[in-house]
Image 1 (cartoon, helix red, strand yellow):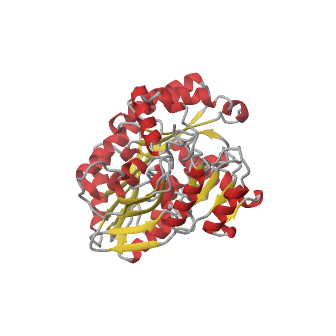
Image 2 (cartoon, helix red, strand yellow):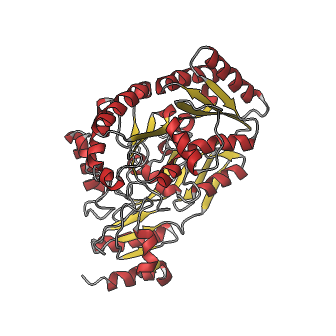
Image 3 (spheres, one colour):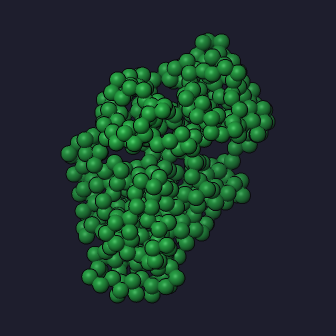
Length: 469
């Protein structure tokens, strides 16, 4: 089929300057963040309004042209990358970045899908409110992508995943119709909760164009610490101890191992938290809407009790904002330190919190037996059960030969995840990276339920084909 008529109609909708076809213009939209996947789109279309998105999708539906929705293109599983056919249209939402409304009494903010997460956080802060979603890519990721992948981050323990922060959505359906669901209601018991179909669907059921999101009172005080531990099991004991003493003031509880600290210190100028190395570490943070030293004193006494009772080996509490940033740098730089060290095989998994220690011990043993000499770079949001269980090649070993065994490594890790009642994707989604892998771990009934929803909403199969299902 000659694409010229379609491209002309898309140009008439969004303007010729916003239909990109030259390879040098489309390349940034055609490669995923990890450089694992690269495609060749027919065009990249950049609408500025919901009406334009709807018109673009209608034209694509008429010609049965596949549509690949894209936000900030910071995904980690290739979910927003077109294929190499040269026949798919990437719809970038980046021009749709307005804050449409902010209601301080209702504690909601209504934003368009292309709003960068950091800008959303800033708008909430300027209104003396908190939007709690926080992750490493917040300076470039967009809320539409966060919604489409049900992003997690470091504050899920207290505030929940992105799914838990949404009250209403506006969505362009595969037919080009607009579902206007921008309701700022916390109670709405009038049938199926349709918005939940689109959150985490990775653009396979429609294009999220705007959302009503929950806001929270802005914290006035924070307290940050790193505790040294013997084992991941002790991290769970510490989690239970801190929750019992501090309640919902506990905002973050991040586990990372000695090898993580060693890599961060090797590749970044970050001070060691203690004079001597310890096997495991937890970074924890309390926050409170009450200003003053109270939250810091509470953390100090809680950790002192943990050390005295033998749960923790030692602890350091930040005494300034600068020191708090240094402690956070130990956790936040792990992924970049890994990248600097060389290729590794990543796993974004979730395990019932109570079984994390047991899982790490058992799976470390299985991986070490199958792949001698590998380095386990394990870290993550242990307070909500999410581990980044990464396997690095043996030091000085053949990187290419190790990466060639990725499928074998994945099988060992994912089979162990399943045995422990976990999930092979906690916060990154399936995209194209895990769409085949998931067939081993979801039942045929569950997969068919998902397919039936897809067939109902997208009978032509044009929405982000080759992803999730």
